[in-house]
Image 1 (tube, rainbow, N blue to C red):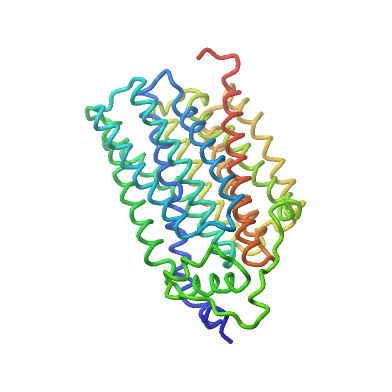
Image 2 (cartoon, rainbow, N blue to C red; image 1 turned 135 degrees about the vertical axis):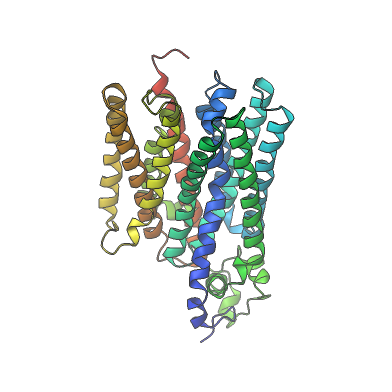
Length: 417
C-alpha cells in the first residue's frame, strides 16, 4: 500500500546503500572544515605562538555553534530543513575559501589582524556546524538508525582523513621553505572542494533517493512540516490527505516533554563530549609534553585520536557489541572521567607510548559511545517528534563540547602563559 506521499513501501529498501554512502559523505563535510583547522594546529602554533590558537579557536567556535543550535532547536518545527542544510554546507564552503584568502593576503604572517580574521572564520564554522549537524541529525532521525550511524562515522572520518593528509603534507614539505604553510594551503584547497561537493550532493542527489523520499513522505503524513521542500526536490509536490482526520493538526510532544522522556540520553551525550573536549585538542596540543617524535608528536596524537574515534563508530555494527541498556550507557560514560587523572599522571611520569595508547582509547570510547546513544535515542516517535529529538540531541552534544573546551583551560592553572 502506498504511503500518503505516494511512495510504495518497497521503495524504502531501494537505494539503501547509496543513502548510507551519501550520509557518510555529508557527515564528512559537516566537520571537515573544522577538523582541517584543528589538524593544522602545529602551523598556527608557529604563526601565533603567544595566542594559544588550539584553545582559543575552539573556544570561539563553540559558543557560536551552541547559541545557533539553541535557536534552531527551539524553532525546528517551522524551519525548512532543505534551506537550513544548504545554507550550512554553503557557509562551510565560503568560510574554507576565506581561510585561503586570509593566508594568501597576509603571506602567512602572524599578528593580531590575521588572528582576528581566523577567529571570525572559526565562528562561521560554528554557525555552519549548528545548521548542518542539527539539520541532518533531525532529518536522519526520521529514517533507519544505520543512516545516523553512517553520518556520525563520516563526522569521525573527517578527522581521520584530515590527520592522514596532515601527516602526508608534513612529510612532503618538512624540508622546504614555508613547509607548514604550503601544507595548510593544500589542506584548505581540498577542504573547499569537498564542501562544494557536499552542497551539490545534498541539493541534487540525496533528496531523489527512493528510501529518503519514502521516510520523508511518511514523516509528512505524520504532520512534519520541515520536509516539504525536500519532498518537492525529490519530485513529490504535494502530500495528499487520506481522509478528513488528516486535515486536523496532529498533536505532538513538546520539546520539554521530549527532554524529560530522554533526559538520560541527552545527559549521556553532554558528558561524553565534556570529557573528550577537556582533553582534545587543547591538552594534547600544548600540555602533553615533548618526546622523541619532536614536532611530529602532536600531529601523531591527534591522528591516533581521530583514527580510533572512526573505528569506534563502527564497533556498534558488530552484533552483540552495542550497549542498549540506558543504565549501562550512563555507567560507561561516567567511567570515562578516569581519563583525567590518567592523562595527568601520564604527562608527568609516562612515556610517549602510554600517551599514544591513552589517546587511542579516548578516541575509541568517544566514537563508540556516541553512536550507541545516537542510534538508541530517536525511536518510537512520530516524524515531527523525531526531528525535534534529533535537534535536542545535537544541542546537548554541542553544549557538552562547549563546556569541555571551557574546562580545557583548567590544565593551564599554575602554568606561565
